[in-house]
Length: 176
Picture 1: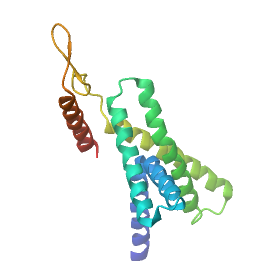
Picture 2: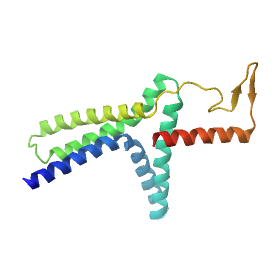
Picture 3: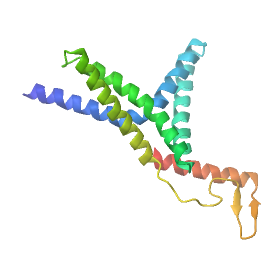
Picture 4: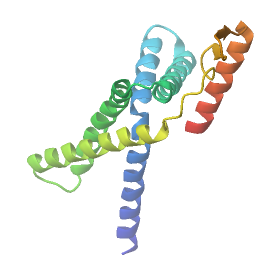
């Protein structure tokens, strides 16, 4: 009885991890691709790991910032779909592999894998939509122009960089 509980608990933690980490499938694929390309290009093991990690992190941060900043619903759906499709593909392959354990029929394994891919893709899409809530537009918060009663004033370059840096820091802190 204890062994069955241990197996079911491990399976439950694994399924929780699949759903929790599904949002990060696209950055992981980007990091893996960049790391493998760098390694095959002669960057060495440490260089490939650093480049892959930086590429994956940059993909995640830029995707979340683009999703949070954009006001267009069409663009938000496109960004969320770009994150959800690799998650669905990963979910399909994970559930197809796990279904080999207890499902003898190939047709049922395909059915479970397709249902799992749909569930994980929708979960990833929903999580990304929930991560970046729509914020009201505040003039001068992201851009370099501040609204004044009569006209737009262009602020100094260093002040603009500070504003963008503060905003990016806020977005990263809020969403990671």
